[in-house]
Amino acid sequence: MDEIRYSCNSARETLQWINEIIQFLTPYSSLINDHVVNFFKDRLWENVDAEWIECLRREPVQNLLLIPSGALQDQWPISLKEFIRKLRSMVFCQEQADINMALPGLQMTSLNSVLAQGMNVKKRHEVEVLSAVISTVAKSVRAHAIVDVGAGQGYLAQVLAFQYQHPVIAIDACSHHGKVTNARAERIKKHYTSQLIKSGSGMRSLNVPKTITCRVLSIDTLKTLVETSIPGDDVEQSRLKGENQDQGKLHWLSDANKKPSTVLAGLHACGDLSVTMLKTFVECKDVKAVVSLGCCYNLLSEEMIKGDESQCGFPMSHAVRSTGLSLGRSARDLACQSAERWRSLDMHAGIHNFELHAFRAAFQMVLSKYYPEIVMSTPSIGRKGKALRRRHQRRSAESQLHLKGSTCHMGQILPPVVPSESETEGILGSASEIQTLTGEIPSNERAGCEGIKSDDKFSHFENFCHSGLSHLGIKHSNDINLQGIWKEAEPFSDLVGPYWSLRAALGASFGNSYST
Image 1 (spheres, rainbow, N blue to C red):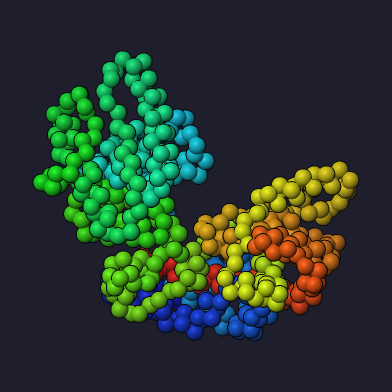
Image 2 (image 1 turned 90 degrees about the horizontal axis):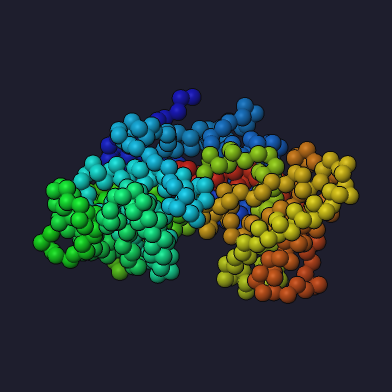
C-alpha cells in the first residue's frame, strides 16, 4: 500500500496535513494522555488493542526501540502495520541540509581555549556552528547588532562579540547568569587585550556583550528591548568610514528617531521564548533576521493569558487555532521524544530503561495504596541516578574481585542511563522520576543474562521504593507490603516496553504541530 505524502508547500496543504493528524489521533486520546506511571494502577495496557499488545510483548527489545522510527515487522497484525504506516506518512521529514549550500561563504572557526572555557563537547560544537551561521546572516542583512535571547552564561554572545566582532546584547531572566557573563567577558577581554598589545595592533576597543536581565514574557517586551538597547547608526557609519578609534564600540541609545537593525539569536531558547522571537521577527521591522534553535517545546503555553491570544506559545497561526486543536501537557511531552535517539539505544539500555519505568509504575501503586494524599500532589521522586550509579560502580568493582569468572555480573551488563532532553520527559520517559536508581537494576532474560532471579528484581524494586519514599520525606514503614505490590505488578511488567513504544511513536505527529 502506497503511503500518502503530505506537504507544507502552501498554507492550504499545511492545514490539510494538520487536520489529518487531528482526525487520525483523536481515537488514541487515552494512549496519548495516560501517563506511564499509572500503568499498573490503571491497567493501561487494556486501553490498547489486545492483539497488538500480545504481539509486541513477544518482540525483541531492539524491534520495540525502532517503533518510533516507523519500522515494521512482517509478523505483526495488519492493523498494527497500518497504524505505523499512517504515523510514518504524517511525520515531517527532516533531512540534513548541506550548510555550505544553504549559506554560501560560511566560514566556521574553531574556538580557542579561552572562549571555550567551561563548555562541554556538545556545547562547544553547538556554539562553534551556530555562531558562524549567525555571523554570516548578520553580515548579509547588514545588522547593527545581534540580540542573544535566553543567553544563559553568555557562551554564544561572547563568541559573537570577541571572535566575530559583532555588537551583542545578551538577555537572560536570571541575574546570576548576567553576573557570570560579565565576569567571564572581563577575563576574555583581558586575554584579547594582551594579544593586541603583543601583536602591536594598538589599543582598539573590543566588543564586549552588554547584558540585560529581563524576563521576556511578551512580544512587546522583546520589541522594546530591541528598539531601545541596540546601537545607533553612528556605529555603522564609523565602520563604513574605516575609523579605527572606537570602532566596534557600542553606543547604547534610546533615540526613537534612529532605527538600527538587528538579528535575534537563540541557542536553546526555551518554550514560549522561541515563539516570542519568531513573532517579534514578524512584527518588528527593525529585526531583519532570526536564527534560533528552540528547546523544551513541552513547556509551550496553551492557555490564554488575559484574553490576549498572542501571549500563547501554541498554536502560533490563526489557521491552526481555528481547528480548536489543544495538545495538553502529555501530548507536548510526547512530541519531545526523539525517534533517532530511541533507535540509537542498544538492547541492554532499552531493557534497563523499560525496567525503570516498570519500577516507577509499581511505586505509584505503593503511593496510591498507602499515601493517597501524596498522589494528589503529583509527586516527583527526583534525580538521584548519578550518586546511585557511582555507588553501584564501586560495589561492582569490589564484587568483580571475587567473581572473576561470572558471565552475568550487573556491572558488566548495565549501560549508563541515557541523558534526558527536558525536565519532564527523557528519552524513555519521565527523567526526573525514572533516573532514581540508575545503574542498580539488572536486565532480564531477554538481555541474554542468565541467572537473574525474580527475587533479585524485587530487591531492586524494594531499593527503588525506599529511595523514592526518602526523597518524598516519608519514613519507610514495615506495614507497607512491597512484595505484595510487586507480585501484583510483575506479571505485566513486560508490557511496559510495548506500551511506551507505541506512545512514543505518536509523539512524532505532535512534533509537526509545533511549527504552526
